[in-house]
Image (cartoon, rainbow, N blue to C red; front, top):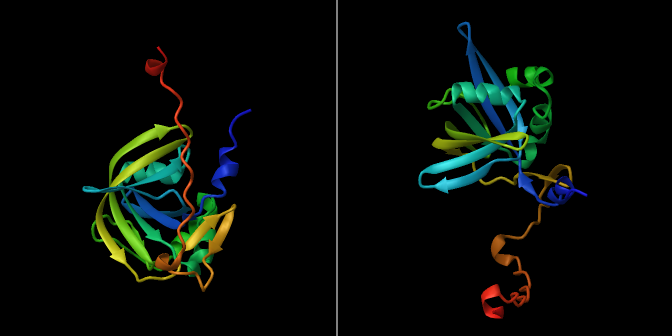
Length: 189
């Protein structure tokens, strides 16, 4: 029996963001945007982030062609936006056309009014399983303030409760007792 990775990962809370990119064809720029929760900080020096997108994604194809994208980290009020962009390209086209956004000065990808944002240029990409991981160098950042984040947990969008304690007031988890290590082969001989 194979591991139930999807079932286990449903218990891992992630932030929710919207990635944007575009394609220039026949003198026309067509923007696209998609909801995802695979944003990961990779390095601070140089500043790198990653996204993982399904290999068959047309959004991924555009991103790999332009080598530029932007990411908007969503706050709890942005759930309707996240839902509207968590669909196939034909279904999200109207939502993309109506986005309150402007092209980024460094990449040309759409920047949304969001809690925080990044503009990235492609540094590398790797095919891994049924996805492609793209690594981007962050060339610009924007902070929109400290608002409660939109989360994805247990297969749905979630929000922190309004009375969520600050990090300094959260009690630390009990320590896990250490397990004695197994003797090594060198010790047994």
